[in-house]
Image (tube, rainbow, N blue to C red):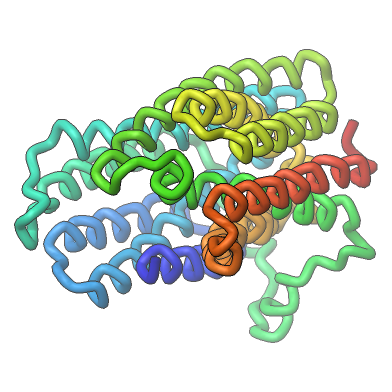
Length: 368
């Protein structure tokens, strides 16, 4: 928990900060490729070292540095969507971007399963980390193949620390659609994070699995979740482009996520939890595909896209810090009434939060 929380807090700052510097970069590699290449190489070095770390303090520092470098790179990658993809194709490209994350989870799981390692040895994970580093270096191919025009130095404003810091505040009065997209994304991600961050404990406390069985149970459930997510993302994104509308898909996908949370609230068997995971995967897959397209249409400034996307990414990272904290307090407070009641009320509250995130999408005026 300490390691993950420290990394998430670093991610909150790293993405908008790196995005802002990316917007001001005039390297011959371009604004974005520069911030994909060097942070990725730094992340590779950090992860190579993490495989041999044997203390909580070392892992905390290592993962914080990994989040710093990886989020710096991610900020630049996502900015290429509004930079180079026409509005009419952003649902399709958003689907590919959305599908990439669960594919990363699958590949990571395969590495952990197929690459030799010794879970009892202090540095028994070293080879697995090194394989991840090799995969990560495919970013170099991205840099080599992706065009990215160089920014003229004359277009870069003079740097003043005060104005640079103040620019991270985007006025909701001046840019209401941007503010509403931030709020809705925060609520939907928060609602779903209660499920994803506590699924392991749910299988132990409610489904009655032993500590040894719980991990395998979660892995089995997540397989269905990831497949549903991939299919839904690759269907919803292009369909949104074909229809020419975004908000109905975002609202519908969010409501499907809320329905999945309600199903999980009443699930008492692995089969019922798997059904909830399939529904959740379908909803969240569609959401990741179309919401990125929605975000790309409400960015306040063409010259500050990476910074503004980094600010939006706070709505993605912050809930993953808050959800475990809130859930732990909630369950601790109510477990005297039984774990069934504690989790049921938590998940029903999460469903309400997700529905609120869906409903408030109608406040976005500039996007159909």
